[in-house]
Amino acid sequence: MGVFDDYKQKDSVVVVYTGEGKGKTSASLGLMARALGNGWRVAYVQFIKHWEVGEHKFLRDISDIYKNKLVFYKGGAGFYKAGSLSAKNISDKTHRDLAKKTYQRALKYASSGKFDLLVCDEINNAIHDGLLEMALLEHLINSRHQKTSLCLTGRNFPEKLIDLTDIATNMTKVKHHFDDKYLANKGIDY
Image (tube, rainbow, N blue to C red; front, top):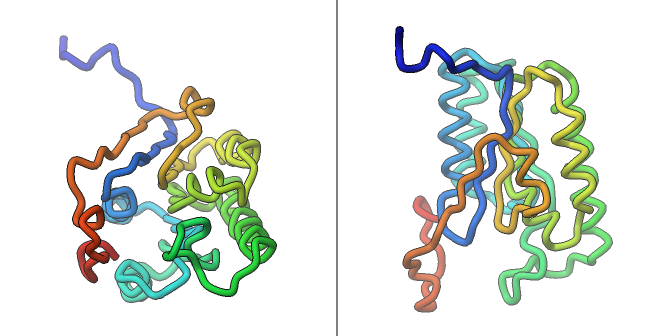
């Protein structure tokens, strides 16, 4: 008798990468790579990062390789309520409208049964910042197709919803050069 004989496997899981530390998007990209490497169909939806970042170029380049196995959607208008880093000249209404449009796309992917994995990058921030209601996040989790795994990233995942997850990782910052007034480094932070 083996050690794992009493274990079962779920058809799909809800994975959360949250916390103040760096690495949430990077972890979701690693999860995406693992899924694609196993022949899965993946939808990757970004809620906040509107400007051109390294992962956008990467996703665009590999989409030619993975063709119908990878769908990428970039929504949102940039940082919201982030002080001097906030997107300039974007109204609160525009931020909310773009977040809702991005959410609708994610919900469509989650419930369609066409994807094995849906990554919603920075959705937790959209919830925390009030661009989307927490009830919508709960609805997304509960409406996903039974075979579609879901990855939710961003700071401040709602503690009230933790019981709806299967794997939750809190990225804890030990040190980050931003605290010493250094901007993000291309290729490392974005």
